[in-house]
Length: 100
Image 1 (tube, rainbow, N blue to C red):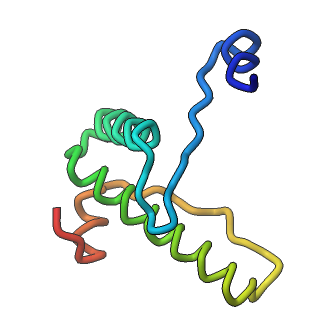
Image 2 (cartoon, rainbow, N blue to C red):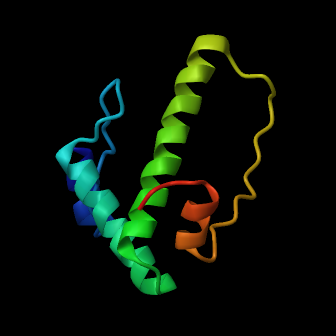
């Protein structure tokens, strides 16, 4: 019902990002991440493999952080929203010591 509203009123597509308990993506979610990585790679003129590696790594840490917050609770009531995307995804992956 919500997808019909999105398609008819806002002329978009509703894609729920569904993950299993151990972080496995649903097929539609995996397709979305591949598409997003292709767009970012083309726009920033970076290698697709570097971009998708960084996206998956950041996603893994976000899932881990969410699980830890559920287990032990939040330490502060404020969050930092001034995250700057890296200028070079290959260098960011190398700095994080992530294999491509």
